[in-house]
Length: 460
Image (cartoon, rainbow, N blue to C red):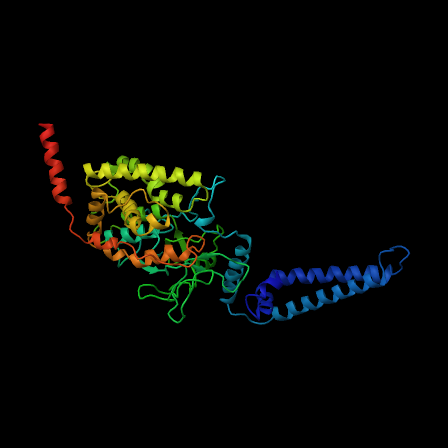
C-alpha cells in the first residue's frame, strides 16, 4: 500500500502516517510483537540444534526486517505528533480511494460490450438516483444545484440537452460539453489503453487519435470547456473522483454541485426528471413530454424503436461477426420502413403530440445519413430519401431551441476520429450536408390537416 501510495505525491508517505492514526497503532503493535519475537528466539533460543532452519543468514534477515519495522513505526509515531490541515485527510482519502478503486476495475467502453456471437450488448447504467419533489428527498429540484456533463456527439447525452432546451431549463441546470474526439484517459500510464471523453484544455496543443494518427485536432473548441467543478481532465477522472466502482465512463452525467456526486448517468431517467421535476423552475412548465394519456402508446413504440433503431445502429456498427451484423441490419431496415409508414399516418410517433419518444428517435435520425450509413454500415435506407421521416426531422429541428443543440461537426468528428479500430487514420467524410436539408421548410401542418380531413370524410 505504501509503495503504491507514493505515486500520488512525493511527500505522501509522511502525510499518510500523519492522517491515518490506525496505521500508527498497527505499526506500534507490530513492533512490540516483533521485539518480543526477537527476545525469545535470539536471546533464549539461539542454538541451531533445536531450530536447524535458524541459520546465520536467516537470523540476519530477521534482524534487518525488525530494524525496518522498528524504524518505520518510529517515523509514524513522530510524524503523527505534527499538526495536519483538517482538509488534507479528506483530500488524500478521496484520491487514494479513487486510485485504488481504479486498480480493481476493468475499465471499458461500448466497444468492449460484445456477446459470444459477436453481437453488441449494451450494459445498463450504474448511477440511478432520482431528483424528486417529495419531502425529504435526497436530491430535491433546486435552481442552479445540478449540472449536466454532455457531448454534442453522443446521442444519449444529446437527448438530455434537447429535453433541457425544450422545457426551458437553460438557466436552471448548467452544462459542460466535453471534447468530441476520444483520447487516452491515462496517457501517463503506457499499460492503460482506455480511451474516452476528455475535457477541453484551452492551454493545450493539438492532438491526434489514440494511436498517434489522424488530426491534428485542437485541444479546445469555443463551445467546449474544462471541468468547472472537480477539475477533472477526463470523464473517467470525474467518475473516479466520486468513487465509481463500475468502470464505464459515459455521458450524460447529471451532477449534484452541492454534494459533489453523480445523481444519474441514465439518459432515459434524466429526461424524465427534466420533464416532470423542475416545472416550478422551467420556462415551459405546462409542456408535458410524457402525458398520462399517451403512456401506453409511448411504451409501445419505445419497445421496438430502442432496440432496432436507437441501439440498432450500434448493433450494426459494433458487430464482430457477419451473422450478428446481418441480424441487426435486417431488424433495423424493417423498423425503418415501419417508422416511415407510421409517420405517413400521424404527426409524431406516439400520436399527434410531441413526446419524449420523439426526442429519443430524432437524435438517431439526424445522425443517420451523415454517420451511420457510412460508419456503421446501415446503408439499406436513408432519411433523405424517406419523405415522411425527413419532414418529421425538419419539424423537430425547427422547433425553438432544438437546432442550437445540434452540432454536426462535433458529431462527425467524434465518430470518425474516436475508434481507430474502425477508422485508423481518422478521415472524416465530407458527407451530404444533411443539416442543410433540415433547414428547408416542412409541410407538416398541411399534411396533418389533410390527414384530419381524410379521417373526417371516412368517419362520415
